[in-house]
Picture: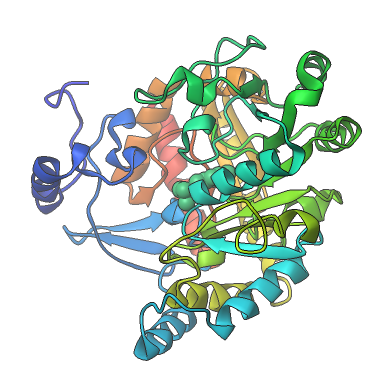
Length: 435
Ligand SMILES: *Cc1c(COP(=O)(O)O)cnc(C)c1O
């Protein structure tokens, strides 16, 4: 889309910041989706965030549903989290030596996830999944990994595999610079398609080290697992001697105090976490059974390391966040708000005769402009992005900050008030009427 045809929703200062950033940083952003190019907009440059709101550099206030792409489940700059980080900072920013607080956070994660016996902290979800698969390959002595179309597991080479045309074949790299060799051992199946997974196991069974899955998908928009899908994966991997890796970087502490595995009663072999567990600072983790995790250096031969891993400020933010989430009724409240938004959006879309599908669970949802149910990558990617863009633009004008893509989950936080929900639905009603 040409710059001239772009609807410039950002104010003057934001636009100036964007021009400056584009001269210095590729596309003016440090992560592609932030550019808002997919929905024909310029990004709002943010000055501050408090509670449910963001303020841009032009002084505009937005009800924020991006939630920093996941971490901000308490809302922005929760005072207790900020206080914990400030207190930790006073003792030092990073030591390259262990701290007792890392064990406090490890204990909380292990208590919340039955599948975790040992956990290793890293700095990003990308590192967590990359390391978990290295471990899975080492533990099984097998080369291949199986992932699902539309699932995102960070930007490690082997996992950047394009969702092909649904073909159950070796997949081609999704990014320039990723060699065919780097993805040659990556198999891809459609999400929610146990038959396809079964077929791949028939073909490659003893070569598949691990199946990695978002147990509720959130990176093709929110797509729920069909009943039996996750249990089927658990059974198949067990029988085939492959490891099951739940990538709960997004879903960890998003749907309940724990993960999807807590809700469905499945114990994966390895778990990846990130986003919420760092409370807004760079922190992620992978973990699982003791016998597997002890293969990681220094106890075992699988090398994995990080200068800032378990950073004291990030650990402090994570601890404060999880302590607040452990309170009673937190998830009931989050779910009630999310349901109110999902139901309200469906009703208002229907009133305007718009084919809108809202997939929602816990504290996340997605709005798809689609005639059919969205159950996998094919149905997600065939939704109407042009209409979504118009919806995004209208909402942004009305002061509601949605993720600038239908393929990013909308995140509800504890800071969103009943009034915020009402205001959001009123804005949506006007937006739908214009489409
Ligand atoms: C965000 C995300 C990642 C990548 O995490 P980063 O911290 O951005 O590297 C991996 N897996 C899932 C499911 C995610 O949502």
